[in-house]
Image 1 (cartoon, rainbow, N blue to C red):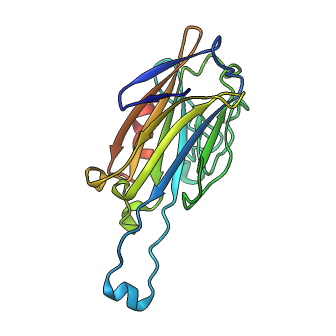
Image 2: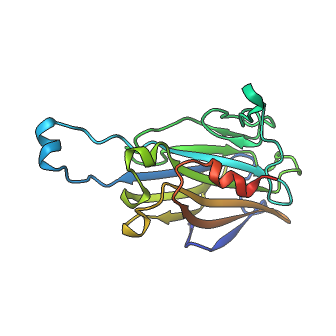
Length: 215
């Protein structure tokens, strides 16, 4: 039976107990159906769908992202091909971490987005993986985590065994936030540790979080 964590808690994922050769980090959520006003109903206006993205930062022993990817026009960092796995760079160069795709609605049961991690093969240079969730265009669309419910992040081993999960629903206390540091995987002796964090931020871009994880 999976261990259910609360904010701030952690659990060791030991190789002796789980098959960490290929771990699925799954995220899911639902969106509250807001009541439309009279004018919106009259005009048939449809509320914009929520587009939640999951991003992974691969960090060194100092909890920093060392490689920020290629440099594009005007010497701007693109983050493509570096140690950030996101919608524009879905597979890490090590071949050990990748996004499976983008679900823009959160509809349906089960995971809405997944990141696959080969923890046993991940080079020792990477000591931590941080998982951030953002509401793409949240500020412009006036969308926030206050309307997100049944949100969860879970870790499933290569045998399909759910090792742990962290459930976090929105509510009025989250109506100012458009991104969140959801959880971290931290390398430790004999395996990895999964930490439930759930720290929100008003920004709707993961770049704000990346500043805390880069040199």
